[in-house]
Image (tube, rainbow, N blue to C red):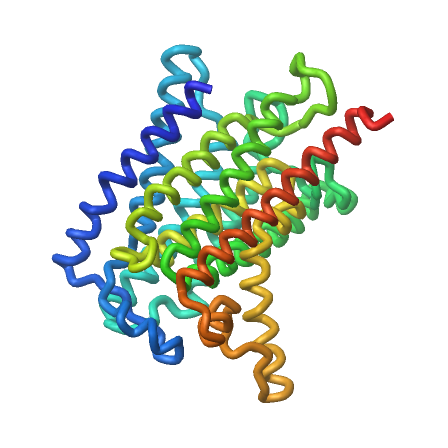
Length: 367
């Protein structure tokens, strides 16, 4: 518990202290946000707002986890886990792509950064590295950092090993690439209003911090009764998730309307990559669809809008992603944000109840 508290305190301190320093630096460098011309006209006033706030979010998560890891190492001689390092690699690598994209935008002075092909290639390279290492690197717990299959909660309902080990790794790499692309783009699309992505991500990561902590409390080979999980180092994953939630909480102080800084792709791609990696590491890839339900809705609204327009040249929504639709319906920006937070909170609560219900059922407590 102390390690969790250390992670929270350090992450919050880094965010609260570091964000104003970054705002001043970005102002001096004139690295302001460029607003899409086809977006709501009310957003044009945001032009020039400092961006790349994701740098601080990433730094806060890493330093929060490192401080916690140092405490456990010096007091309990517990070495950092590979599972945590790989999850952080997924976050940092996707954040690096986002940083390059943000930097290209401010240098070009337009809302166009990396090309789609360049961003896709980068995601494929980093996601593939993460996937392969997560399968082949041995862990001290004896449980894999990832399993070659698709799981709703813990045990895969579709195991890739049916094709042999080599092909299973290839299929898993494809699966991880899909998850990384899906979640990074979903969180990126959600990042369109002041405080929307940071608040929604905070809620989602709080949910995952609780789930990972429950898994650590009921780890296979442990002493606690009930169903146990064959997950590698879930306590480390819980610390990372709670550091992510805390970093988003601290950043929200400066990101709420009217935002004095945006997280940019540096933040949204990193948080999306982290969300995907934690779902893989906790063996809850399909439960993540519920836990990140708001992100799914945002992404699907964009897919529906584009697909329907290509077929009929008509629009389903006034504008996509769907948060812009409600803006154009006349909802104030702050009302859209708070109500979307409420929707994400509802999804997280449903996901946690589902997770606990699964544990109760597998523990045989209903009979």
